[in-house]
Length: 104
Image (cartoon, rainbow, N blue to C red):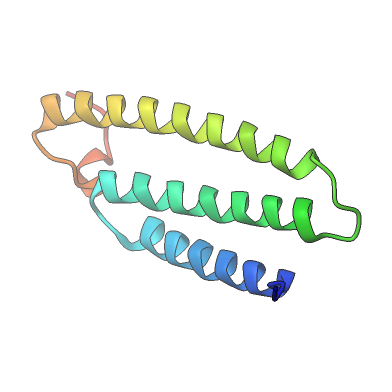
C-alpha cells in the first residue's frame, strides 16, 4: 500500500483555497461568493485533517477542529442564504454591486 505524502494534501488544499479566494474576490454574484467561501473553508478542513492524520504528532485535535469548522460553515451558509434571499426580495438582484448602500 502506497502512502500519500502530506505535501500532496497541502498542495490540493492550497489550490482549493486559491480558487475560492479568487472567486470570492472577483465574482459579482452573491451566491457564488458564498460558495467560494465554503470552498475556502473546505480547504482549511483538508489541512486540519491532513495534519491530524499525517502530522508530526498525529492526534484527534485536527479532526475536532474540523468538525467545529464544518458546523460554522453550515451556520454561515444558512444565515448567508437567508440574507441573500431577503436582499433579493427587496432589490430583485443578487449582484454584490447593488448592495453598496443599504438605504431605501
